[in-house]
Image (cartoon, rainbow, N blue to C red; front, side, top):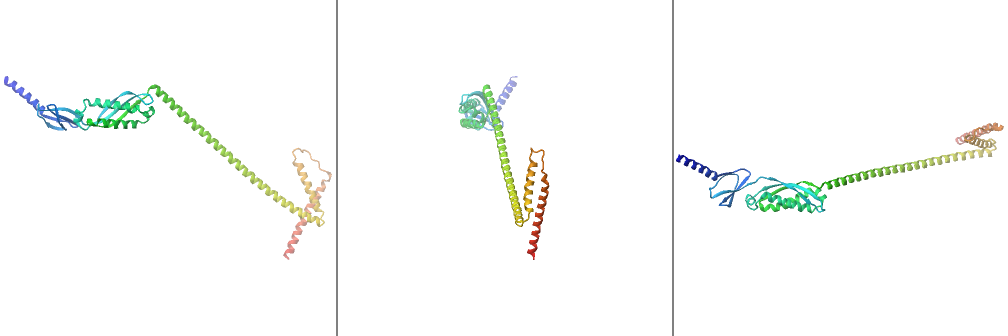
Length: 313
């Protein structure tokens, strides 16, 4: 029995010795090796042999990129608005020894540093800027925190503000302001539409007046041309009648009388207030005058033919 117990004790001691001697570091981790409690080296992933009692494993550091949630906190902006802000940080340990021995509580140190700088950055901005310039806030936080954590053997890859939540009354006020701004833009667009419509209407009326004036001018020109031709015709007719009178043709006088008679009769007929017209008994003389007109035209035609015949001979 004594020999069996001794063998069991030796087996247990051997197992403990082997466990303390042979250490396997998993992928993505680095362990620090200490000699009598003092850091001596860093063990990478793989198999390592340690001397029990003389060597010991110090800190087991995760070398993969890690995500750390930043708890929400109340921040006062430059214009004294209180907003609630939270975020997230992505960091990675580059130097296991520094991360293990330069700071006592790594995660707590990172959180406190980020929360302090969030208050600093947002405190220098107005509420509108803090809501609209999220990228600028992230860039400023990343630059400051990465520089501050560099002595700890860390690399901050990204810092993102997840939510900036103003108080309820500010949200309602912003909603009313947005609604008023939209109504203002709608009224401006409507007024602009009315203005454009008025301008187009005025342009149309202007073009209509111009076209009407052009039409009146063209009509006046045509009327003047017609009157000119009529005057030329009357002058030619007067010349012909005058020649006939000089030659002793009484029908020329009848022509003038008949013309005046016909014009007077036309005026009497076209008057709107004339309902009954009485003709004199001498109206038969009108026929004789008309006959005289025909004789004058006939004699004028004969003279023209005689003139052409003389010109040919």
